[in-house]
Length: 378
Image 1 (tube, helix red, strand yellow):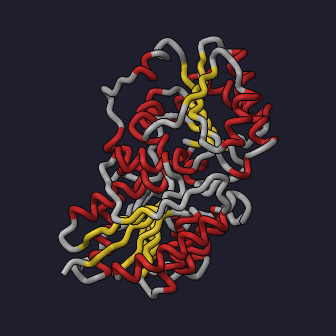
Image 2: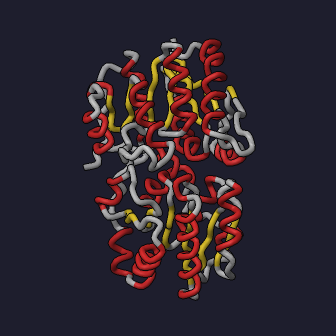
Image 3: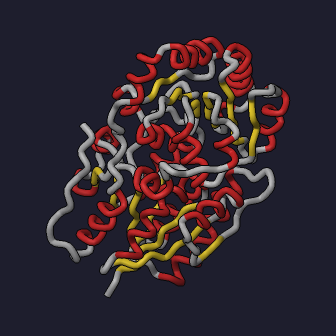
């Protein structure tokens, strides 16, 4: 009899990373998925579900205007209790570090259901950077039974925290699996075609810790770059957060800065692939962009993805005006420096993470006798 694996996610980045895993579970001879979305993000989540043709079995629809972390935590915890009791899954799979992740894992623990943690072991060891994600993932580690670490560094973090090594598996990151299905070298769109004579800088900025003065400095740097490079256009898919939108409208008025609505996953991945440089405070984009051979400047002071910095595919620039401008100019003006960041192997995965995770869970329940091999990124 197949084991029932409940897959829980609630935000756009989670959905992108869990979608290939849901589809791999559907193909399994031994496992069957039950998909639960919390809709911590509503509209942006729906875009991904449509793109990957995933219909949830349950939709908690917890998102509210100006929602608080306490609201999300309490609602997910309450709603997940009844769903777990009804479905009696063999395992609950959560991803990464969102409030949905921690709340769903806690609900599973309260029901004494096994927990698998996808993208386990990422750390900054600063509980407010990123906030609240750093504590969400640390707390989820204490609850989880299986830890699917994307890299050897993530595994080492878990080992230092006294996690049983027999429960840790290095899988690579499922976001690379997603890229293999979304990026099309022949992709074309009206959005891409209007910038064909320009060098495109793709900007994404949304993190809570960057709200206020840090984001203002980012936006002022973008405007300065647009002023000094007439062949450059900066495209910013603006996050739905009203505070971010207000700042963007105030500081990014320029004829070569385009403020657009968030892109669906197909458009975003292909637009990123066609861009010149990516500036971001997103974690997922730090993992994706190296597979697209794009240099990434990280708009954060610390990152839980140090492998990319160490390998040279990422560079941390923080939110300092001068540093952002200097490092962006280096990439725009020096092809040798640019090429050094774009001709390196992606340390985050090889596109097989979802199948590894399915095999590991199948092994855990005795369907597969031989332990699946790890993804080695060293």
